Image 1 (spheres, helix red, strand yellow):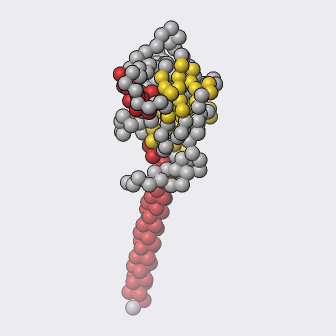
Image 2 (cartoon, rainbow, N blue to C red):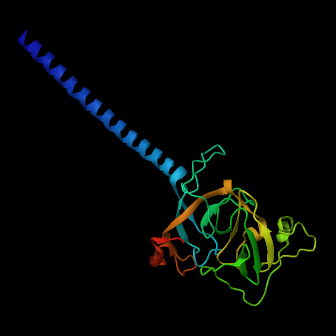
Length: 249
């Protein structure tokens, strides 16, 4: 009887240890799964409603933004869009003249552009020999870069402007890159230009940006490299260290 009791007790002890180890393993797996799920959820919420990363692919905003800059964009500033709807969260501010914004252009709903706001609803805009006028007054633009000082350029896509002239539609209107307007910005729309003024596809050519198309406000360069650098791995060899952490104005 004593020997049987000892064997039964030992067997029960082995079963208890095995059961405890199994429960411990399940708890560990559950903790890891829960942590990963929470981290993923936080990432999705942050990316959707707060901050998103963007890369600058063209030179249209030089020297403010360079090809190879990676930006953090504040999506909450102007009210982030709720996915799957046309609704937006309340905005902390409205786009102002001089703001650099990320938006979906009217010519391609699959892309994001970065330009500077130069006209808000109700503004009258005009350009004469590269000089921008807002509501009849010249604008100081220290951030603007010009690469063509000797000529102008004509673009057929600028014909849309004729229906938004201050004096009304005009068939005789012939705008050019450096001479156009005066135009009136409609309600709920914005007029944007690239800082690299002679090499930028912007509102001059494809029109106004609607308020609902504005996605966010760039505020920081978190990484930058020169993609034209010689040799392999320019993202390692040609880092623009001086631009890291630079605020965007």
